[in-house]
View 1 (cartoon, rainbow, N blue to C red):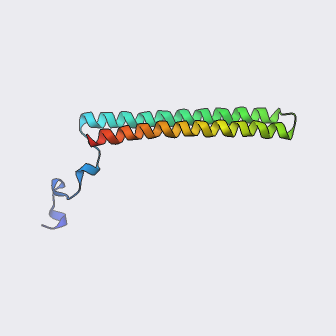
View 2: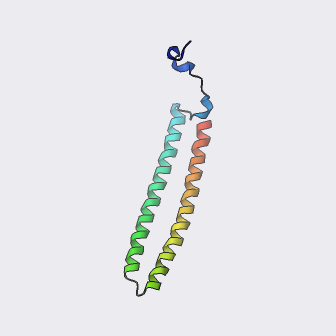
View 3: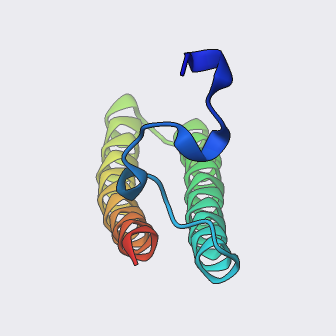
Length: 102
């Protein structure tokens, strides 16, 4: 049988590599993707708000050193927030991986 004559069910692939797309599995997988999207959108919103607040504070700073301190504080908070975000997204991603193997 040539490749052109194969039916969809005869395609030789390892189906365990693909997520379970049955109605229940797909719904759980879809909820996981939406949770990652919501977490990422919230992270971006927080980051933009913090950056806008930092710019305002820097423009009102009395000296260049005060502006650098404000930026340093913002960078530390941004890094901490980023690490938390990566942890949450990693947990959600692991959940999707576990769901796709069931």
